[in-house]
Length: 112
Length: 114
Image 1 (tube, one colour):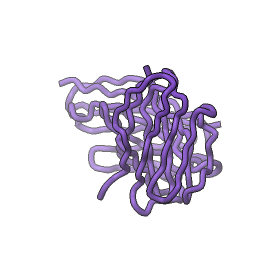
Image 2 (cartoon, chains in turn red, brown; image 1 turned 30 degrees about the vertical axis):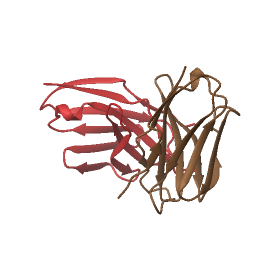
Image 3 (cartoon, one colour; image 1 turned 90 degrees about the horizontal axis):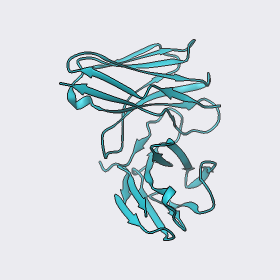
């Protein structure tokens, strides 16, 4: 079945890199996404990666996918206080329902 | 361009009352999703529509919940009667159909049932 897991909390200092991790169980995951949620707001798509890719870079964001271990990570370079938010990993499966399944979210706290 | 528009943004209602949440998807999108977010259960898919037809409603908690999509530009999620455990943020999202298309979320409807 579908199961996406994330650690709950990460604290970093401003200027450092942040790495948020996610594991998933279903090998038929086709697209894997990272969404950001700021307090009181909706979900903002940050980036996504196809399951046939290993890495994707978009400005300060780097997504790494290890298909063998079913592990996805989001690296934020030069983390800023404005990056403080909850980050959700989500997947869509190749088969079955065409809707996102989300992890529990990782709260990123950036200390000045 | 306007994003996904939800109303109301905030609602406080008494237990037993009917609650109707509304959503206008992005123009041209033909898939629409309703999610619920709570501290205990995180983000859960309630139901999704494709071309106005409900495809998967397995996440709808119980008969008190119903969702409709009478046309391509409007959907409602109704709770009748509401209970305190329904307190949550309800998100509507839309996309073009097809597995690789981005799903865009509204700002959410924050529901409190007292």
